[in-house]
Amino acid sequence: MTYNSYYALKYLEQETKQKINREIDHFISEVVNEVTKNESNVKQLTNIFNNNYEITDKVKVLNGRLPEKVFVCRNSLLSDLYTIKHIRTIYHIFIALFVGQCIHNAVEDYLSSGQILIGTDKIFNGLAKFDVAATLWITMFLLTLANYVFFVCWSNIRINIFPNTLKLKMWDCVWIGSLICYYISFFYYFTNAVFNNKFPPPTAIIVLIESVRLTMKSYAFIRSNVPRVLNYKSHSEKENPCPSFSKFLYFLFAPTLIYKDNYPRTRTIRWKAVFFYAIEFTSIILFISFFMNRYFLSVFQDYGKGPIPWKEVALHTLGNLPAGGAFMLCGFYILLHVWLNGFAEILTFGDRMFYKDWWNSTSYGPYYRKWNVVVHDWLYTYIYKDMYENVLPKNRFVPKLFVFFVSALVHEYILSVAFGFFFPILFLEFFVIGVTLVFLTFGGTFHGNIFLWFTIPFGACLAINMYCIEYFVRQNCPIENATATDFFIPRLLTCKQL
Image (cartoon, rainbow, N blue to C red):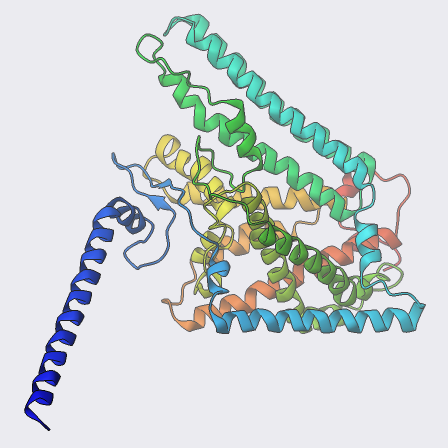
């Protein structure tokens, strides 16, 4: 090596080191600037994690009150998990199984009847009289809009009445009584409408779920805005305490049951994502259709024509645990992921945490909180929180028990009216067994997760079996001159053909 070559290499080495140091300094400076600039965002992000680094959706408030719901822009958990290659492969496996099931049903339909239906006949039968159901939905939607008009009327007149007067108390009492009468009349009318139109169970369930959803929405709006009106001071505050109609209208369609004046919003609508959700929704409906027909409807459709083989029912319940689990997963995915994310995308609704990682739960307490965040938020905010803070201060057990009771009662109401009989299997599973299992913990071990994944499909399969049996027994063993008591007495106990 020559003398000049040596110094050339040394010079190149020094230049390389200096360049690397400059790049590192520049990178560190950018990181520091970014962290400083987004300090408020960092604080907000830390608020959505608890001490165990689990995602939370509530922020603690002062004065010893329970935490309140907070909305931030975030994806659904499965949407984030699908970005992982291994999870995406599991999703592809389910698609492959679905395609295989469609091919199997298409071949079976063609060989048996010469037609390819793949479950569409069951869908059309289940959605019969859908035009009548749509008319009922428009009616209940208009009635819900009327809530806003009456609320504005109450608040505007109340503001102009002198405080602490007899007129003010009478005005409030009149509207409280009117609101109670409205809710009673609302449920009475649409319950009778379902009975009188004799909808098939799927159509009836849609109508009843919508009536419950709109009732929860209207109550959330009123409950959230009444304190504003009560605390409003006309001489010191210029802004009207009543939200605009556009905010109320957006809330009626937004995929949340908690009212806020403003929600975090996305900038654009991804129409490709909306189209993909529509394809997923249609596919899962098809899957549920021929899935229910193969594993449940075709098995029980002749029950009531002769003695019920209870040994076969027991074996079918135990043998169909995978079917019960699949039905439960399909219901979760189509409602809490596909349907809600589709609406969130169309409405640019930013907070899409409609569920949490319930599948990792090791006991029923976390499972109930994570399974359906949308309904859980409503029960927590407007029942549990109100009872804990205003009715029974510092008492957690009674509000929790009442939440389970309301949830079980509403579920049983929907199924009883939809099927046309009272058969409280779901009520017992929710309120009796469900409450008991909350106190059964496994110390956070995997044993609890295994127990959860056994009992949930078992409960789903048992409920589907029993409702199907009672439904077909009533179809195949009708009685003349039915009375109101026949609605509550299981036909399993009274049918003479059994």
